[in-house]
Image 1 (cartoon, rainbow, N blue to C red):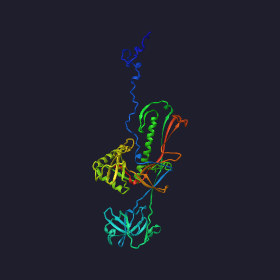
Image 2: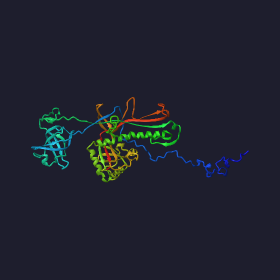
Image 3: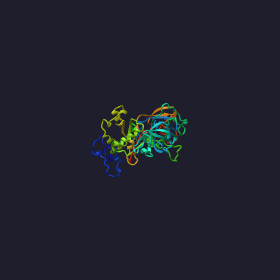
Image 4: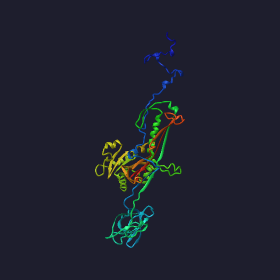
Amino acid sequence: MALSPQFGSVIPSSTQQLLPTNYLQFNTGAGADFAQQYLPEIYEQEVERYGNRTLSGFLKMVGAEMPMTSDQVIWSEQNRLHISYLACTTGAVVGTTQVINLSPGIATAINVISINDTVVILDPISGLEAKAIVTASTTGAGGSITVQSLSGAGATLTAQGFAAAGLKVFVYGSDYAKGSNIATNAANAVGAQVAGTRVSIDPVLTQFANSPIIIRNQYTVNGSDMAQIGWVEVATEDGTSGYLWYLKAESETRLRFEDYLEMAMIEGELNASALNPNTQRGTQGLFAAIQARGNVEVGFTAANGLGEFDAILKNLDTQGAIEENMLFLQRQTSLDFDDMLASISYGANGGTAYGLFENSEEMALNLGFSGFRRGSYDFYKTDWKYLNDASTRGGIVGVNSIEGVLVPAGTSTVYDQILGTNIRRPFLHVRYRASQGDDRRMKSWLTGSAGGAFTSTLDAMEVNFLSERCLVTQAANNFVLFRGL
């Protein structure tokens, strides 16, 4: 027996057929206005509209990570081997000799020049040059020497037209009479040097230090939200893919924290304010270290051509002259280098270079580097995403903006006071706190009472992240920071 009347005058069909008896009409009023017909098509995949959003990787390319156990890392760097003084001034003329005051007003300028040393005296203003022998020396801070010109009797510096200030003096040897005998200047006493003695020079190491900072972050999801699962298919920057629900946000928190580990090492500043200077001392990051102890190039542009870049090379010659260097640049500066390199051909001017990558162009390109050679230096250039990303320093080009950094490749030699010997370390490396009982390089743990954690009465799951680390920037005089005009 058939039902009468039929439900809604609509008879469902057992197959997907368009029939007058199974047609649903949704324009007859609110009673038949089913919301289901208006449900949108939902893409369960996320759209990666910003591409790879992570910024870390810079320190992985140029440095290393090493454990430490103290609140401070201290290292010593060698000073220059030879003896020279800048900003010297001329003094009194005594017969055919003349006094030279060595870097007056600079407390660190200790006179270690001995009688009978031969010196070169340069006047960068007039271009004059003289060679002389030291006839008397007043040792100690702010000392002076008396010199006799080797160009002839009476040819004092003043008589030759040397400027009264701004002179450079350096020792190139000594000249003793036959059968002479020398002894060590008594206790290297401050004052007039005793004739027939020499000043014994003890090497002085320059000491630097940095302190680790504690970096923390946390992601929290309450127990109720954990019970309401919404699936999303994702592909994350750390290489994982698949379906996630509430832990999708935890994954992004972890990625963000890993970026912070590197960003803090790059941007870190020592705490000079009154806000907890003892417990929150801050740390010296890469940018701060280069500005304090390195070289700063302001306003590099392709319009200036090779001349401006060659000036950087000449400055590197006065420093450690590290043969292989890496350039990490923001977009405009990278394009400026490309324009500059367009004028370089193979041969005397340089050309491509891939020595750091075992002469493999493919290896260099896979790592995002392009190589070129100029003079006796090899450079490997790559874009630095940190300087291009809009959420960090990207898009800010102009007065005092950071537009790139030159980092020497390889290792440097430093004196380890604990080991009592010279050791080799990468110019840039991260030190993190660790011991046999606790490793604070990158810690993560769960707290709360949800998601498998049973540590408290909190109705939530807390994902905690912690690291304690600092950056060691050795031989910062070999680094170059590019800044905008």
